[in-house]
Each structure stands twice: as structure tokens, then as C-alpha cells.
Length: 377
Image (cartoon, rainbow, N blue to C red):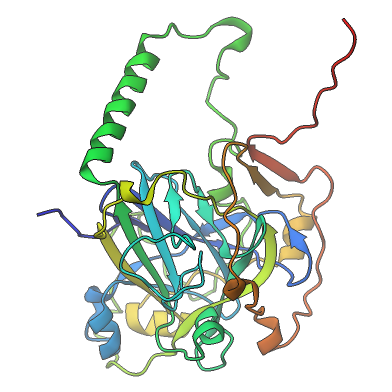
């Protein structure tokens, strides 16, 4: 029987079939206009619900999964870097598909497509709500109607984020692995490059090697009472010795609404649907926790509040653009195009906005350069 266990590796969720998912803190975009990809400002810490079963509400224990701390109106994106084999990954926001806007499903579907294709899709910053654009994931409390779930279904029951992965079926997976072995053999048999075309010592620059997901060298000051951080991948620190564990109570539930629009494509699958397994390889429910609840439950301080985006831009730190010339954008559905940003529910954002300066946006992957004109020979 196939292993369907989801594991935590540091702050990375590893789903069966080689799928890796990290939740990345980022700058929240203005809700008007279309913007470059905002930078990654470090990972959200992720903890297992089962490790705090005596401190979380009963419904959380029933759903299982993991939790992470997030501030009101804080933005996030999902990184899939490190995914090792092809997968169809469903991403739900309150059990509404972030790609199709349809209700949560137990299998991959087309018409509309209800999953992202890994590893081709390097990340997902929001719901697929425009042609070549997405609207940013932004955390809001349940009960206001501001979440994607509330606007699409008329109810706010689930909140959080849901992930479910599907591997290739046995035949296609064996074929893919054979092709990868042949490609590796060809690579090993090629002579190493030398001279002008040789690789730059030290590898690719940060932007080309996944710099979009790397934490930028700028952070908000840590709270004065924050405990010393633990080593990466170590077990979370328990509450202070001798302190009574807080009993379970109804926690402030959080979900995802949407913020500003950014240039990002959600790629159309170029495989037939029959290439994918009909049964999920693994799935996980991700609970979103307010910072006070996070501290009460885990005994840890939440990360500092997000960096002010105007200060980030003034510091000259990079924004990003990503273009894959061989991939085709997936058209948005009417359902997700009609979702309103959280500012329509919580009020305008009066923080000043300073757009990136020319040259501050870094191009990733295929640069869509200008065409070269031919002439007479």
C-alpha cells in the first residue's frame, strides 16, 4: 500500500510523491493596479496540530494537519521549490479551489482545471483571477465574509488552506523516470564546458537560482520578549517550564481573502488527464492562527510583523518578474474574477505606496526580450 504520510522538514511540507510546499511571508500589494512579484521575506513556521492536541480546539484535532501564525491582512505565497517528481497539486482556500473557484474535489479535473502542475509551476501567490495575473493571498478572520470561501460559497466554515497532491499513474511515472535517467546519462557523458561559455564559479546568481523565494536582507525588528530561536528543523520549544498549559478554547479562526493583483501565470496542464492517478498521494489541512493564539498554543513568539513595503522599496531591494515562454496561461473562471479584495470589507489601506524604481525588478527564467529584425544580406 502506498505511503500517504505528509511530513514536516524544517518548515517545508513534504507530501508523498516528492511534492514540497513552503509558505512564504511577503509584502502586501496595493489593491489597485498590477504589480511585479513581491519578494520573499522568510518562511512561516509550521507545526503539527498533533503536538498540541491538549491546547487546540476539538475541530482542529478532528481535521489534523498543521498550523502557522499569520497577522491580520498579512500576505503570503506558496513555494514549490524542491518538488522532485511531476505532480498535480490542488490548493484550496476554505475548500474553494484557488485555480478554478470550484468546490473542493477528491480528484483532478479539467474544464476548468482544478490544480497546478508541478514542478513547472514554481510558486502560487494568489487565486487565478485574471489573464496572466493572480490576486494575492491575504489573511483575514472568518465571520466578515471577506474570505474567498465566504464570497464564493456564502458561508465561512473551513478557513485555512488545503493541499492535495496526485502523482502520475504507474505507467507514466515509470516512463518519466526512465526519461530522467537517460537525460542524466547524457549530461554525464558531455564534456565539461570551458573558456568563454563556462559556468560562472559559485553557480547562478540568487535571482536565477530561486532568489524570489530567498529571504531578503531586511527584516522588521524582533519583539523585545521574543525567545531565542531554535535550530532549523529542531522540535518546537514547549511552553515555559512550570507554566500550566492553556486549556483548549475556541480559537480566532483565519482564512484567506485577496489583495492586489500581480503578474503571474497559472500554467495549463499539457498532459492528458488520464496521466494522473485518480487517488491522491497525500493531503493536509493548514490552519491559520493569530499570533496571540500561536503563542498561547505553542509557547513561541510569532515572527515579527511584516516589513513596511514602502521602506523595502526605498532600500532598493528587488522585486521580480517570471516568464516561461513554453508554457500556456490558464484562463480564469468567472467565479474567481468576481472575488473582491479585503479592502472592500475591512476599509482602505492608507499605508503609502512607492512603486519599484526602473531596474529594481529582476527577470527570472525566460527573458521576453524584444524581437531582432532581419535585413538584406
